Image: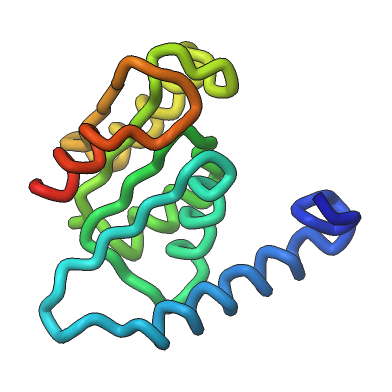
Length: 138
């Protein structure tokens, strides 16, 4: 972790840099027209993708927030992507995302997207192949 990585020092500039960089990456791997775009943020990446979708040029059809925090910019994502499908995922033994914190985040998400889906799997703070396969098939 660097001295300015998402700390108070130049935080807004760091977020703007992340958003710009992610938009450039997205442009470089542009999918074919009408392709379904899915965005997955894992751990600290969950907050990053929420901020990116709120402030950048990228749009997605599916937003997957996996074992991470849901920042205040979520409402702006809803304003830009009200029809997105949203999934929240957490391992049932994740020591970094307590169940109460996850349920609070799920409530905030469902207030904006009532059809948001919550997925749990037996495990800790990691990606789970079975859940990934289920989401990919959806």
